[in-house]
Length: 98
Image (cartoon, rainbow, N blue to C red; front, side, top):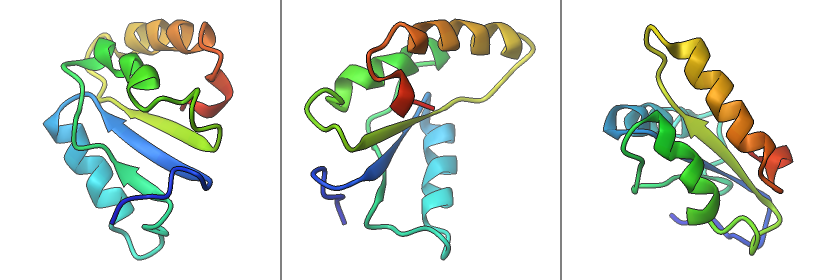
């Protein structure tokens, strides 16, 4: 079931198929309201591509959208997080991207 983009909702965007599957498992939990969460079936091509989701989900058009970027951390995890934080900080939607 698709979410109503005119109501408050959360979109999960994974960096690859594995993180997509992780997010899908999260929203399938009995504790999550499936009408307000969605995992995008399109996903990135690595951790750097996840910030492109800000444009893909058209956050400017949907002020009630919240976006969760799902990435896995490897040996350079702290460097990746620093990079992503900078990219998000430059976004006008930074208060709705996690």
